[in-house]
Length: 299
Image: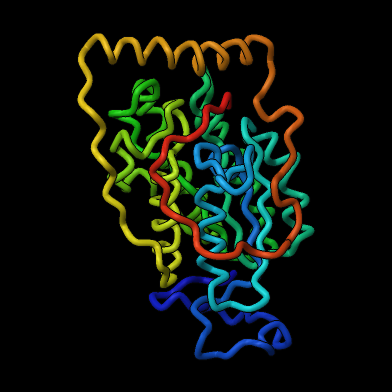
């Protein structure tokens, strides 16, 4: 497995095939990765960060990370297998084999979040499945990045499951240590406690939230990047009555549909396919940090 050192270069004896780097100027190489695959659910798909150039599509932190890794790196390739609404067993069954087929040298895996937020779920069982997945992915020799959950103490709706998130986070660290993976630490990313970092559905990150997570991931990988910190614009003060009206609107548009899907054993990801199931060309230009409200999404 490729380890990341303080300069963002590889430490292990394993090296990419020589011909892979033939067209690269060694002076310009900022990191050792050429084939990046992202696995996960709505978080990695990019829900909450709509793409203004492609209505109905989303960008997200993984696209932003891929863009930065591609800058100055010729032949860099990126695939994103994530699909909204997926539980960890679905990610294992529907994305793992494809990820192995792509033979990546960098993998990000964020799985288990949808399991943890469900009433009655067991964070230890979720971590057991995660451990099996990481064990299989580690056979590629790729650098593997795992994610813990953010601190949801002050987050509307999810604050009540803070203890379960903390248990799962410790399990993620145990899995990472066992398989020599890297942990992208969202719990310690205090910027995510700001309301402006969250989408209007109160479950997904806003464009600014995705931008902030992308910065953290690149910093975790010790990669030099051009994503600057962005201070969120303060939200307008609301009266108690205005806040309650907003709560009612949120419940009608987001909470009730979510409950109905659970009762019907349906997922917002039913019929949705991965946005980048294969390696393809990267994006033109840079991605703005965002800040405008995301379009409503029923995930």
